[in-house]
Each structure stands twice: as structure tokens, then as C-alpha cells.
Image 1 (cartoon, helix red, strand yellow):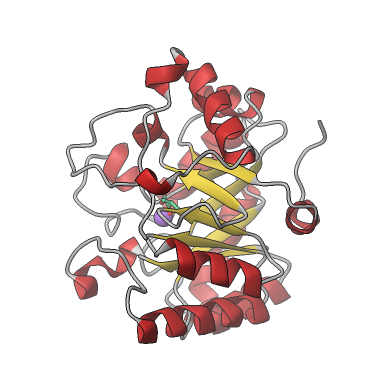
Image 2: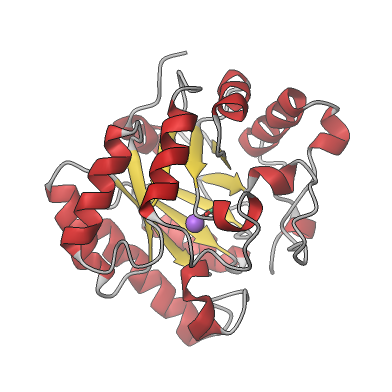
Length: 265
Ligand code: KIV
Ligand code: NA
């Protein structure tokens, strides 16, 4: 199989091929996920919680993400590598550009940032400078202080309408992909139908163009935090990390994950 490219992602959506994405933080796991046919690998700022043992993603730095991006990049030959802009690194276009250049030079093929609003200007700034961007809407963990916790977003009609508008806006600003986290399945499906770019769901139901899970969660590791409803342990049925990654990729491609039990109505 050929390595994934950014235009390949949009083509996959047009052809109805679902995308399987997992987070990853080091070369050993990267090699295994790549060999299992995982399409996209995310160096998420979730590393603050699952690798560094913190209570939120807020303390994660650009240097942290750049280090793990370089580690993961050495393990990949086919998957597209996406790196998270950590808290406040995308607060203004100049800072976001500097961090994104570091991630691309470490081996990332795309950067991800949370939110719309003033972030639309940041997305345009990066895309105009040849940096592919993945947007992230719904539950944005970097907003935890304002939100007061990790809660499902877009539940009422007004919030769902705002989410749909933001999704159209990030696509118009030039984003190549959109992560939707913890939103009702119907809202995520409507957004997916609205957009030409692929949507990747996490707790966003089966109607998205792809799915992502945190690696530690899908391997059944105890994070020390309450396990969200959308998490499934694929190691339990797979028996090895490689088999778990393969089982996850197949379940995503065949539309078997997530089922209703792992989604919000
Ligand atoms: O940091 C992360 O792992 C993420 C995914 C959960 C989408 O942003
Ligand atoms: Na993240």
C-alpha cells in the first residue's frame, strides 16, 4: 500500500472508504499500528494525560509534541502523521506557524488545532503557508476550564446549529479534516453530510468518515480517569497489540465500531 497523502483523505471520503485513526506517542507502537493498516496516527496532546500522568492537556508544550512526533515518525511508513498544537500554541497565527513548522520538520504531515472563532484566522494563516490543518470541534479538551469538565457538546438545537456553522467555517478556512469529539451521533452525521472534508469521530457515532481513539484506551489501560462511554477495549478480543489494532481498523472500515453502545444518541 502507498503512503497516505492529504488529497488521498478527501478521495477516501468521496469513495466512502472509512478512515481508522489512533493516537500514538512512540516509535514502537507506531511501527505496529502502521503494519496493522491504521491510516492516520495522531500525536495528541492527550499525551499529557496518558504519558505524563497529568489531569488535563493544558501543561503540554510544543517541545513535548515535537519530541513525540519525531519518535512516532521514525516508526511509520504508510500512515499519515498528525500532530496536535498544544494549549495556547495556536493562540495567534505567528506562534501557530512556528510550532507547526517544528512538527512538520519532525515528520508530521498535518497539524491539528481545537476550535473555530478566532482560530479560523490561524487555520487560514497555516494553510496559506502550505501546512495542512485538521480542525477539532465539539468537546475540545483545551477548553476544560471554561466547560467545567469533559461533557457531551451540541446536545440542544442551538448548540447543534452553532457546531454545524463552525464545521462549515473550518472547511471554508482551509482545513483538510475535522475531528468531532463527544457530540450526538445525529449532529455528527449531519455535519459529515454537509462537508467535503472527512470527519473523524471520537464519541461522535457511526456516521463520521472515520474514527479515532486514544491508544491507551483501546488497549484497555486504566487511565486513572472515568472511562468514557465511547471507549472500547480491542486488546481484550485481539490478544496482542497488533491484533487489537487490526481488529479496530477492520471494525471502523466495516462500520461495526462505534455501535449504539459506544455513542451518544
Ligand atoms: O489529543 C488527542 O488524543 C486528541 C484525540 C482524542 C482526538 O485530540
Ligand atoms: Na488533542
